Image (tube, rainbow, N blue to C red):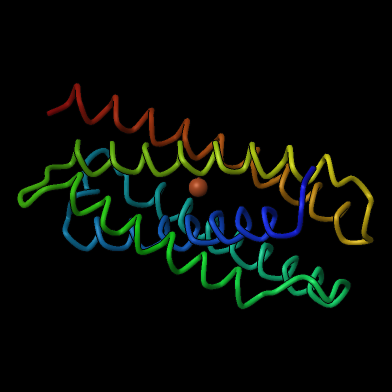
Length: 168
Ligand SMILES: [Fe+2]
């Protein structure tokens, strides 16, 4: 059974991951860690797609909240903030005090891998909900399209990590 609370939790998590993905590219890029092999421009495109995913999710949350009184956008925002905080701590731990380009792009692989997994779960939950509410059908198609793009993000980061590893 997919209940509202679980759906809210998962939506909050993916929202937090999208926020973190954008911040991570910005932070690592500003430290000059994404300069090799023309990585930065490709990753900036990925970053802008993450911003786009964030807007789509926020619109869906807004519509679900309008349709159902049991849906709480504040709770989702709270989970998103907590998730973003956890990601930022993880990034600091993973990168250590003196990170190099390989560590930077490999961290992005981890982050994108996490996004793919979370969207897979959210897609399964959305599918199970089916057309229960008017907006759950829209949720399902949007999540499926974001998931396809996240898989491309992970493939891009993996390719860049391999290139970086053999060119160092
Ligand atoms: Fe992504």
